[in-house]
Length: 567
Image (cartoon, rainbow, N blue to C red; front, top):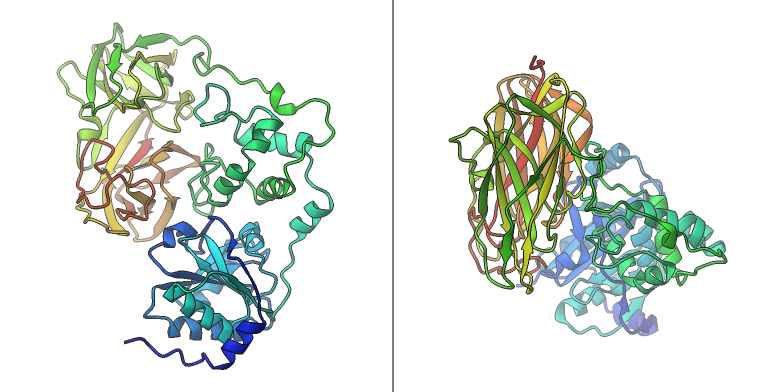
């Protein structure tokens, strides 16, 4: 039985007659993190009939009254398929203040962070306390205005599927200021001096001819043609593929992009992506090193893997190859670069230093496994990997290299002959580099949208953590890395709130973290095996650990070295 909507009155019908109605306004997809670091994407709410957002600013004198009305409305629709959240539309950027404010609000509502104000702009929010009622399936806004009977009537009609227009009502509250939008309206960002440099730094190294991006950003014409797509992937946080929560840890190789740069890009696109008056197009002048060339100069030793034929279709088992090394003395590796024979089919390549009779299981191993891991090639890991200063991978004399290849077919028969270059230390470094895989068991039910998983491991010696990598497959949703010190205190090190199987770099800590002996490290996360996960190949499948992409894994990789020098 439906809960009565107590504050919906007969006045609603008259208000709706006098409202400004039009065809449903499309807002497109967008994503935001909330104050707790959780990821919210409009299209991921398609299991709900509606998403209700209210603009929020704690400094507004009328916000408490609006918040009370908002919670009343939330309570009235508690038994409906409707989600409610606040969106911080102010310029408040201090995450600690926002989290303190979130604690005051209570645990029953999320506070979304819109520090660049781009989502609030897209929704045309103008007042603190203003509502936006969204249709997640059609990516449209069906109501914008004050919290009143009209809003509840629209929400009921949306639940019943009776809406074919957008209702706009006047809202009361403090004005929301959009200084960046006002500035860029008065003076559109210049393509040559403002936009092209951002693209060159953030995008063009992948989005270039022969790069791993699906199209090249090598001219104004290309950028203008792809501008609607660029705007969408910026607002959904698909690009740049940072993935990490910027409020947890900091990593030297995460592709952070500032709010100011995002505002310039989006406002320039909204203005029609004008070229301006520059005589030379800066993007046509950018030169990138050939990915098939050695980035660090000629390696000390080059390994050519066996040539593998990859058919046009079908499923290929993992291929394990042992390569003998000719070294007649112990060696220390300083850096590694992989050059894939065919990037389009080489899904990943893992390399381990193994004893003559040792078998490296790689990702086939389950549980918490410490390995003498050399390095790997994977989506997002295309540059040479240099180990931290005075740290290297040890290759004892007589050991071999064990390589594990995973290929995926793409409709075209091809072959792959990957090479890797090793750069050696002249003298042994102080520390040996290790990788600890922390893996958990799981059984994900069909259609489960938020299946939680966890794993943990105890370091029995004092170690220094230098890098972290999350690994799941298509149902991977999020993953967080934390350390629990012997005194019971906890610290979060890395959060990947919107995991992507297509982007799996090892995130290098800008400041390596020393963990005392007895520290227990935790890897926690969740899977989305529902039909609302756009990457999910089969939501009806129950999932356990498996090697193929349509199976699943849950592994957190910890790169570290002992706190005590090796020599």
